[in-house]
Amino acid sequence: MALVAGNYPPEMVKETMHTNMSNRNLRETLTGKIIKINGQLFSNIWNYRYCNRINPDDAVMKSDISNVGAGLATAFVATFYGALLSNLFFHPMAEKLESRRIKNMANMQLIVTATLLVQGKHHPVYIEANLNSFMPPKERYARFSKRRICRLSQNKIPEKVA
Image (cartoon, rainbow, N blue to C red; front, side, top):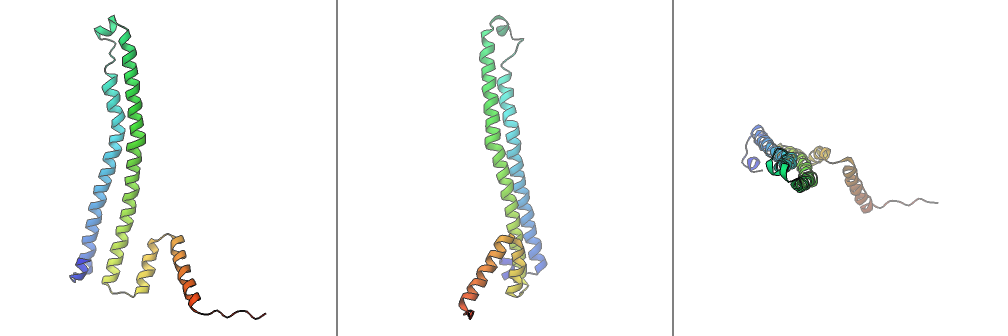
């Protein structure tokens, strides 16, 4: 809005706001990808770290078979924790970030459209009709029906004569 108040041309306002949108989209996409990759790697790192302790060529393991059970138990627990954290923490977080990114981009597109319409000094009814396209149909119609009910309640409706 500072650009609009500064009487900058609409093309410059639109370009600046789209640059802002694209940079934010890039940052949020990278954050989601990093968390998703962490989720994929987390279980693999735990498995690699603890499964390497079970080495059948190890001289200690050849002489003492009791270490194999403890090593397998450690590897199993590590695999379980890795899979648990990956599927219960990292993947849901990445999905939530992706859904928020999509909502943020839609909201920013709404702001860009509203700013350009206000800067163009369009009629408020045109602005409202244009911005209603961003709302889901149920909310759009619910809003209009509430307005109609308010108008009808202000005007007296003649009763039917029986």
